[in-house]
Image 1 (cartoon, rainbow, N blue to C red):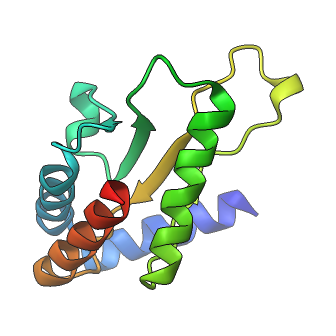
Image 2: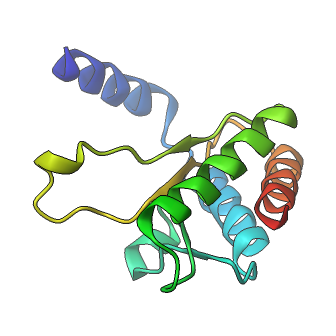
Length: 130
């Protein structure tokens, strides 16, 4: 099933071209809007500067895992009230050898215009500041 989806995606990219400039621009917009929110931190590896998948973690060593998950879930609920549907990382704790920190997962789309991306980033930043 995954192979069929991957093949379909490659066929689409081959025939329509990869929207590299649009996605790069939208990722920049999103990362810039979310970069200076002190209570949260973004993924910062060099390759992630252009990745459309952005993880957002609670920026606190003093909070417990449960408290961090509660804060992340509060952002998800705030987003839902604004019509933004967010997803957070989920793990089966007893099956993870190295359990990752709770995070929001944001996927930036090349299908959105620059204005739509700016509005989504602004709304998401408001949710993170609440």
